[in-house]
Length: 317
Image 1 (spheres, helix red, strand yellow):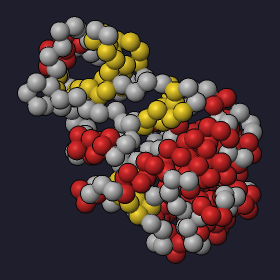
Image 2: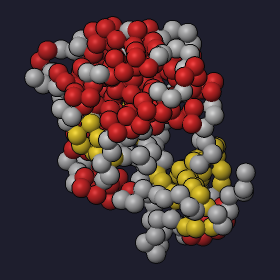
Image 3: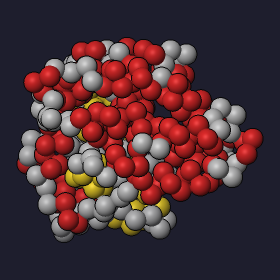
Image 4: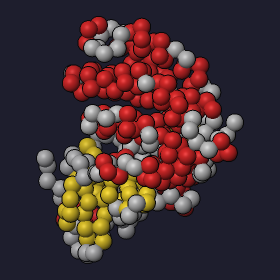
């Protein structure tokens, strides 16, 4: 792994104290310090495009009451520096830990708290001018995955083509009746920061797009379901869904169609993961994602039941 040029980065942002590494979050983000202040340093290969409207987008969210990690401007008004084969950027640090660090945080109380925050986040996102944000179409991606997987034969140990197509049959007409707006786009517990039992902020908007807004909730549920499946107890994730949606509906609304779509969106997220892993030769990861998809198909009625267990007065009809 190439060394990070902390001295040059420090000079670029005009820091008196040289930046020092505190901890690595992953291969592309690091917690660093300069003096007594903490920051998040991100780097990406020079040939990978960044989030073009990031500064305006994130500043608007922050002004609308959502605590996000903001990009830092250097004394010359620049937000990125190219050094060697990488582009570096600095962001403000949000106090707390990622929600996926401790499975014990997956409680009904935390699900409700995250639901509340997500409802506020979506309200703030809906007020932004999202004309500059890319419109994605999950239906198009799902159709591509279905075509790819229909040619895989015995590479799919859990689900056959007929069963997959039957499951998604009702979803195609439902999808186009769902509300579309700017969403986070990569909304999983690893991008939600929690501090003392409360959500303190949200990070990583690189995949923000205009899509059906319930996709963020479904992606979150899918991520939690995956972690419980690794533990051998996927059914435990079901008991969090009503609390998540209850919290959400105290700050936002969900139509009946959005509730009905959750099970299909879960399936779509998982099917696209199967496609992603198989196309890259990651057969074990693909089989695991497919096993979760099978569980979702087998338990669709239970999921639908849990998706409807929120207070009636909170539901938009």
